[in-house]
Image 1: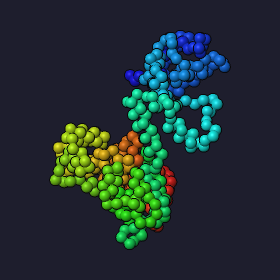
Image 2 (image 1 turned 180 degrees about the vertical axis):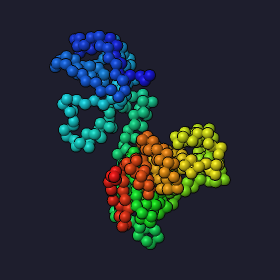
Image 3 (image 1 turned 90 degrees about the vertical axis):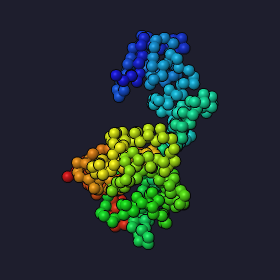
Length: 364
């Protein structure tokens, strides 16, 4: 049974020395919506203040989002509030700042003053710093193209491409064979140069991308191909180990652990000893997806990942990709399979006539 989000036992709430509420017994589980009603001055706001650490708990037992209110220290109050979201009656917006700056300020400080941050223990300061770094990086799109043209040698494939994809999105790229889907993906992982327009992918400027930077870019991407591209003379384990070693992993125990982790994510445990020819097409594609996950990519580029699979197996592979996307991973997927788009709807872009534009897929 899951631990309650909120658990109060025989709690009394005081404002200074005045008793506001007594003998409060309250348990709220994960996912519940609970209303708190009563007249003005009946104790609603006082109880909420107790829960976010603005009033001390001096009588009874209380636990909120894993924090023991009886033992809550000054240093722990900011950490508690990072796990809570508080909405006030009077808004409490900063009137001298824009909406964007209000939200950025909240993300950055999380109710922690600058002084409180610097007086946190080193371990907790590192936790806050890590959180802030992640939040700042979340603001920048994973992929941002402006007025981009894509060429294969001297042939124009796509022009005036404007595309922004944020963290955690799943975006389909559709279009006829030769319409530019694969060419766009090649541009994104550095296989084609960007000669016109402005492009940025996972923090790399495609306009200034050097030969030395291409491998670094690809470490932050996971690429899944239609034809799997597994090494046929190596086992599943050795295929994955090869990628890890090529990207700088040296510790054998960590390599083994990472391989087991990604195989579990695609539900292919206990297949490490097998060779590609011993696997079905769907199983090979799962291994290809596992390979793409090895270095925790910020963006997965999937180029027709179900193109060689039957409908049933395609659905299974798509379910794996959806689960990966649900965990916060960003995916751009080129596909011809409109049945999959209808079954797993998401933002859809179409390549046609040297352009890319968004389309709405409707069920018939």
